[in-house]
Length: 437
Image (cartoon, rainbow, N blue to C red):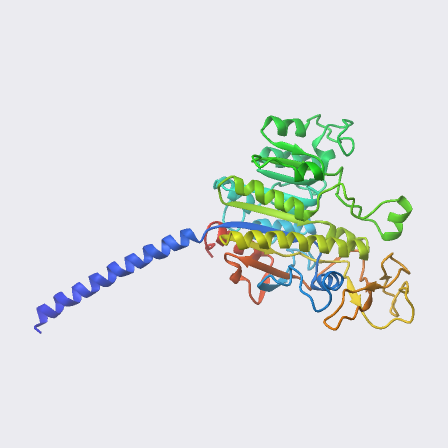
């Protein structure tokens, strides 16, 4: 073959290769666009691996598997703040929402300074999703102003600014707002379903919500009977939290239960949120928090904490089912600290009740709290029910023993050991595509 002919052939081959490369590139671009989906971020606050172990024993036995266990992808979570090793609820939530390290005393800001997310957007990932036309929702078993979900939808210098947080939520236009905290939506002294309002500015945010097209529900029954035409919902199911986060002994003294049945469970709220958000016909971002898992441990209430963990696991089951039916959805979850340092102590006991303290002085709990009856796990593979007690490290949050877990679109990104800022990056990749370095 002559040299000119070889040159022409080479040009033709290169041209064909370039065309093929362009076609493949376009194909990859289309695939990338198709791979965008919806995201559910679930936050069972304060739950370490040790707490999940106690929940497993009491729910399905030591050889059984919770919904949490069955999430296929996981990573060890490191959660330090800009200025300390152990996360705070509001600082940790802000890091999840913005993808950058912040001061521990931060709620949608870096301390008292405005905060830009890792993407460059001047707002949280929820607010960026909303700006891009996605439907959004915030759900919490505590007061809706709790930071695990709240830092995604509001920015304030102090986490105690509940009235301002509530105002920002309502004015955001989020399709779903479900939780406790009715008092922060009503004027001072005005009676609500669950108690009087405390707003000093005189605004009735419940009435404003109705004017803006929200369906407002206040009880479990109203939530469960929500019409299938509702596209915006505000649910306020308690004056403050939907639970009573006190030690077991104090609950008995006050004639209270840890989990009043009048309020919906976190699983019921998540199901309602998924129904409403799916109804929009758009992709969505939902953040949901079981706050009781943090507060019960901080109160060293072992029975209340196990119930809280069971409720969290029920919510994971609801989300798993949704992802199974809608595989274009990512569900990712994590805590940010280990509340109370809860541990299972399963050695033989000489009596049926738990001693008040371990040999090293650590406080111990049984079913009724101090000096209570031993917990009895569900049967193991051999049909044996093993007794155990709970020991506590302290009342506050501690570091370590936290996992990220995920299922669905993009879940395989979880591996090895990952930082608390990586939660944002994983969620962002499914909502918008990979985050530029």
